[in-house]
Image (cartoon, helix red, strand yellow):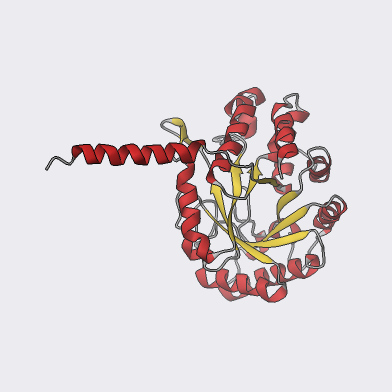
Length: 324
């Protein structure tokens, strides 16, 4: 029997279903940003002023805020949380919900932010010092109404960054430590494109995934992933029995920097990720059906605006106005 007509019909139905999925109307996810004081400093910007602009001028109501161990405790036993005290207080004043990220591996390059004095410690002592830092951070801010959830580490099993080999037992114990200190939800994160999701979903209340559509390859230059929104939607559905929800913890909203920012004129970097790219990125996230998306690049938008290129900042403002 000739099965070709049946196969053609099946393919047509599948393509029709995919088209209907892709073109269906979905609401914009609740938008937020990842705000990195460290990255602000690297761009020559003041983190306090930048954060104030984010919550006051852009009106952002959801912020993922990494707490950098190397910045808080540059010398052993001398912890200075004053910057974070100010940021958390400003979040409280403006009704901003924070996801505080704790651990050795938190957002932004080089990914792992370990104080110089701790790098040579033996495994047991290192664990003790790291857990002491995590404990003090959680205890310090768990009384704040601005803290909506905790995130423990950032993509801890994804081999990216200048980091030691992941210690699975330590990371699971770190999650347990935070659970013992506060009853807020815990978010754990994975690479949305490359990693399996289920292992960390088992330990999380909220699973955060990264969503990058354009990266850099030394041979081809900028490369666009040929991945449709349905890819993320199906994987989120498969993970949904394990967590309360799957969210986009890191949505690309700046160019992939393949070289230091100062190595090229600003307008060249600005051309590599435009307001149209930002709109398309948010629309793509909407098509996955995931309820939240944290945009990655707010420090860059601000830096461009301060140097005569306000277009990304202004476009982001329009998107946040429409965000639920």
